[in-house]
Structure formats: C-alpha cells, structure tokens
Image (cartoon, rainbow, N blue to C red; front, side):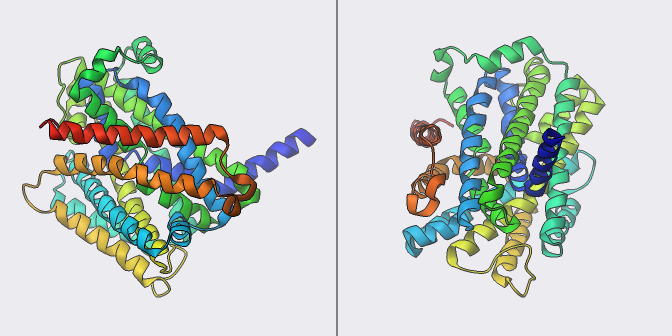
Length: 418
C-alpha cells in the first residue's frame, strides 16, 4: 500500500507540473521543422536518421538546464541575463531574438496557408481567421486554459506517427540507420552538410529556452517540484524527436524511394504522399502541418513577447489582463498582425523565408547557450543545482558543434553554395 501511495503522489505531482517542457519541445516541430525533416527524408532517405539520437540528448540537456534555472531562481532567462550581464548586452540580445523570431512567425503563417490550401482554402481567408484565433486564445484566456489548449495540440502530433506507419517503410533499414552513421564521404557533400545543419538548427531553437523558462516561472514550479518538471522536459524531448523520426521515415519510404528528392515545402511533401501512401497518409500529414503551424503561431509570438518584456523590465504573462501588461500584449499582437500580413503579399518566396529562419536559429543558438552555461554554473545563483560535469560536457559540446556548423555554413556561402 505504501508503494502504491508513493507512486500516486508522484503521478499527481507530475500532472501538476506537466506542460511547459512538453509544449515547448513539441512546438519545435513547426512548419520549418516539418519542411526540414521532410526534405531530409526525401533527399537522403535514411542517411540522416543517425542525427536523432545525439540531437535528442542535446535537446534534453539544454531544456532541462532551462527548466532548472526557472524552478530554482523563479526568474525568466531574459531577467537573469539582464541582472547578471547588464542592460546593454540584454538589449542587443533582445533585438537579435526579435528579428530571429519574426522570421519564425512568418514561417508558421506560411505553414497555415500551405496546409489549408491542400483542402482548397485560400490563404487570404485562412491566415486572417487563424491570426484572430491564436490572438484570442492567448489574450482572452487564463494561463491554465491556454496551457490545456497547447497540451491537446501537442498530442495531435501523433498523426505523423500514423502517417509514417501508413507509408510502410523499410523498418529494419530505418532502425539500422538510426544507430549507424553513414561513411565519412557523406560529410564531404555540401548538400548533406547543409541538411545536418538544418536538422540541428530546427530541433534546438533559441526561442525555446526563453519560452520554457518563462513558462516554468509563470506556472509556479519551484525547487520542490523540480524533479517532476524534469520528467515533463524529458518526455517532451523524446516525443518530439520520435515524431521527427517518423516524418523522415515517411518521406524516405515514399518520396525518396520513388525519386522525388526535391521538396519545395511541407505542403509539397503532403501532396506527394497522396499517390504513394494513400489518402489517409496525405490527410494526416496535412492536418499535422496545420496543427503544428497554428500551434507554433501562438507560441512563437508569445515566446518573443515574454523574452523582450522580461529583458527590458516590462510586465509579462498570460495570467495578466491586457491593462496590466500592455507592452507584452501589444508586442504579441504586432507580431501576429505583421507575421500574417507578410504571407498575404503575392509571389513571396515563402520557402526561402522558412529556410532562412532555420539558419538564423542555428547562428543565434550558440550565443544563447553560452549565456545559459555561464548562468547555470554560478554557485551564488544556483546553489547546489549548478550543472554536473556530464551536463556541462554535453552542453559545451553542443555549443562548440553549433559554432562549427555555423562557420561551415558561412564557408559554403563564401564558396557560392547553398
């Protein structure tokens, strides 16, 4: 009985804190992420599946660090950067995050437009209506109700797992490729290196760290609940990368196998699945893209508003009324209006915008990780909750790798590649 009672307490504690980690990780499978994973499967088949294990480990470590800082300090990441490094550095960081996230917001509305065009709905109808919906969800909702909506949207990503199964992949080859990297010759190919950079950049995005820490603080997670919050983070990271694995596998089993190696965007991936894997796979993929884009179109402007307002000392939080946090809500509104408005411009190169937003994510990420590592290793700030050697090793290795990949990316641009 004591054993059952202990587990009941643990389950109730987990349910009390679940949300921020699971939501943040799953929003990462947004329109840009789906496009990248679809292209990876279509262009290289199973050759990029090996990235999923190390990227998942890095994502778990980075997200856990963020949640731990929020639970221990009770402050958002922007707040801590301002307090520890000064307003000037914070201001430039906020400008960088604002520009980066705006590109991501535009990418989400591109995903909304593309997914609903698959069902015959014009972007001039879908984008304004969905913009109003995401605005109302956050501005008129309370934190608990908003979080419930986001959690339901997170679980809807299971549609991609069904789409992957319906595509009837070569399971043995896929599992083998997941644990065995290709030969070194693959890394000499510019296109392969580019896609590796894209996969890492789209899976571990800078905005995620700011949003997760702000969410942990607003939810009221403390040091006492921190262990249960860890499970929330780990579960979210594993689930989101499992979904990514199935997207790659689904496109490898259909597009790559049948010679469709060039995917212009995630909408094209869904359309191409129809004759190869059937109507159900097509509908599931299209519905998943719409859910992911609408979900992320809510979270990314919200993350940006949290980040900028915390960093510059303005009131923020969906638990507040519009009048209590006007800068927070006006910034959120402006990002939705301008992000959706850009998509309504005729003949816009949406694919290039989506790609560029993922590249900028990768370029900015090392700066955010360095600040996080400096903060989380401060004994005066974190006490006994500073990083372990293992966490430092993984986080610094991720930072160095992202810097190396960024340098490699700029080198390919210098050589006229892309």
